[in-house]
Image 1 (cartoon, rainbow, N blue to C red):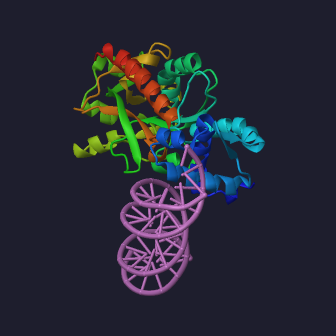
Image 2: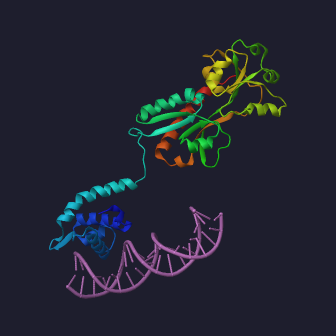
Image 3: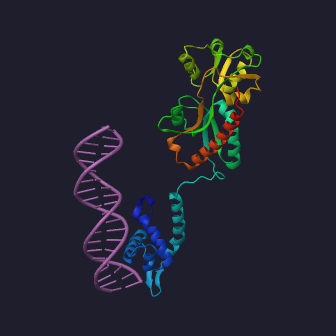
Length: 312
DNA sequence: AGTTCGCGAACGGGGTCTAA
DNA sequence: TTAGACCCCGTTCGCGAACT
């Protein structure tokens, strides 16, 4: 029999067949299935047509299965279990999962925020594979076309098809090399605008959020260096007199390594929120739900620890 | 060209009644 | 106790029209 010839009605007959095999009585089977005896009788007729076999014969002790029905019994039990498993809600078991996840983030995210995430994934889900891809500014296109599971970034307005959850707060801070002249003189708004800057730019943008803040005050700054990586920018300015404005969490993580001095950002600022962002299509996927929760827990912890010592 | 909506026909699955 | 005849009701299917 080809399964494509089976209708949904035929599939409904299989549990009835199973109960008939167990009860050996149409009346008792009807009772168990909360149906009437004639209804089960008609189901049995259809089963007989379906399998082209009488399946049961009447005896003084009730219905006796035919050899064909006996042969079908074991197979039927297994098939019903498989079908039940097929239509049960999808689950995710980290211990046995072998799923691949793609995360988009910056080099800052990779070096500072992700290590605790990876540690937990290795411990809880050793079969899960993780791929980190560079984050870029066209978030929707990236989540859509590159099949990214999760993006870690700071975005103001996520589009409708994108879901996000805040994981922590940060604010801008300035960093300069450790013997920079501004350390003794102090960093004013005027000197901030006068000195040349380095700018971290992911998508080739000519200006950053800070340039718009300066414009509101009738000021501008000269961008002497554009770099697409956070940590590389820190390394590069450590040999120059450039000012670099970065998230506090990044500065505090690398200031010592690159011999950098932190200076207060010379303008009022609201700060910004880091979020984990994902596409709507992943919303209900149990594996994705597990990953989101794990990343959320680890990131909130890491960002809180980074900000505990906030000073300047 | 694809999608949505409304409508009638066909079908599925339940019931009761009753004969074997 | 089983199974056939008949009936009822809700769902599904197929089709054409309207709309995007």
